Length: 166
Image (cartoon, rainbow, N blue to C red):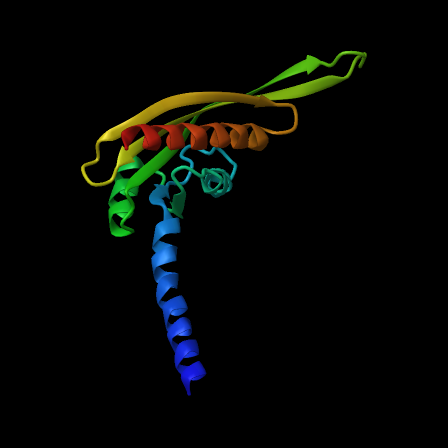
């Protein structure tokens, strides 16, 4: 009987501590809008890349929440409904391809994809702008890869801005 009581107390303590641990590791909720002006490519692929990059940020831990909107005002309203602390929206502002010749490849034209993606990070509680900027990337594979590179850079900027706001 004594062992049963000790086991029951131990199990109860373990089970009641799980919600507390989950809250501590949940991190700051950052809503992520769909890439605006994606121009023939999926804006949700870019959103997924940004979410994966934000998940890698450790201090403070961030909890990205996907949104269905790409427009800043709609994303802010949706972020309020999802009880996020911050909302980040992105916009593809430049996308072009240039052909060039690689070293040692006589007569073979290689396309280079150039993109510029702007972002805006707002605090959901009052809509105040926390951080904004534009980031550029290029890739020889595809413009989607170049957009992915900018999303990774944006995640680092968002993390830095949230750390600076605390």
